[in-house]
Image (cartoon, rainbow, N blue to C red; front, side, top):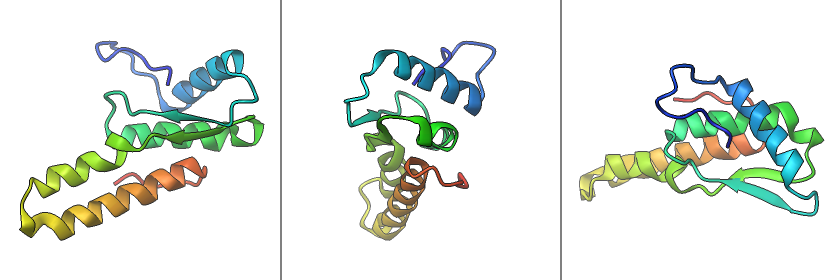
Length: 116
């Protein structure tokens, strides 16, 4: 994704990131490529999902390829933080993993989603 640096005082909004990223991809990625999978790249899972969602809502019907996630941090991190290797936290961690997976699936399918 095309993102401002972490120390940048003016952080771009979802629409700005979506516009800049899609513009860059349209200029450089051949239409024959079947899909582009993003990593979260230091973003929170919630913010990465919101940015992917913004791209798909704004541009999905105009893109020659699918925009998706390589889901690692965007769905795993919250579950790992809850689990902490403790048997008693397994159910809550599984529920968090399921919740993040649903949100990221919705973001890929350009559905309006709530980030909580």
